Length: 433
Image (tube, rainbow, N blue to C red):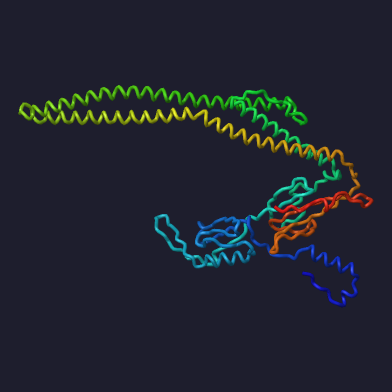
């Protein structure tokens, strides 16, 4: 909203001055208190009940969840409003604390025992003419200057101006690091295919155009070959261990089966002896202790037979499980290798895209004329900030204080002594994440 100037004052001021003042009011937003939003992390501390301390991320619906409260909407609150609402929600609540002896004690929470504060803020985003565009952690009272510094400072590669040596060194370092990572990924793909039975030689033609020499690539392949050999050795060791266990199970099953035959015959003999003793006792030809001994012998032989049968069943089940493990051993390894191969191919494709992009930038930088050391740096920063009305856009200087979630679009111009600027804010578009 524009604030009208007093009639007498406005009558004295020339029209261009009034227009500039109006534009400044539109471009510079009014100072507003920080408000909690999605992505912030709230910490609630209750001094009377330390076990209730929680760090709670603000969910996508703008709510947090806390014991004794349930869910509470916090998005849009200032820090003072957040403190007041959490205190009001927890005041007079009863918390049951379990004591070491197992008893419970009721604790009534007082409002002055509750604190609620923001301990982690949603990040800021810096893009445009900086060396390392991306997402950065927000710190309280962070300025545009600090955010640009975190992003590696201004980048002049697009204009061919500034410290060409420093920027070229940074560029070549990143270029070499990407190539080294790409060669390692290609070596890993070669090793995974070798483990899958695709024993094809490594394609050194993929290294053409990069800073990695054939000798360096050979060293990487040697390490990958050692890794492949270790995987194969470990797989064989697992297989041999399962085969040995199966052989031990077979031997034990054979012994138990023979023991079961012997105990079956012993049980049958004892049962026959008990039957004979019972008949003799019925005719009065045998005393009762002999019958009792025969009955005990039958029970003992039945018990031994049951134990042998139970152990035999256990060993047979164990053998089935080990045979299943042996059958699955190669299948499971193949599934892991195929998954790793898919991930490695995806990473290689991403690295190829990044390398191709850097090669295009590299060629463009070499084709650009150098403005010379006399060129002056003219940065321009556009901030996109969420407010009650949606997204506000305004120009800022390097000392402008940032808010969590701000998006900075940085545009750099190089002004020659003649006053001609290359690049500028018109070349950049605001990207809101």
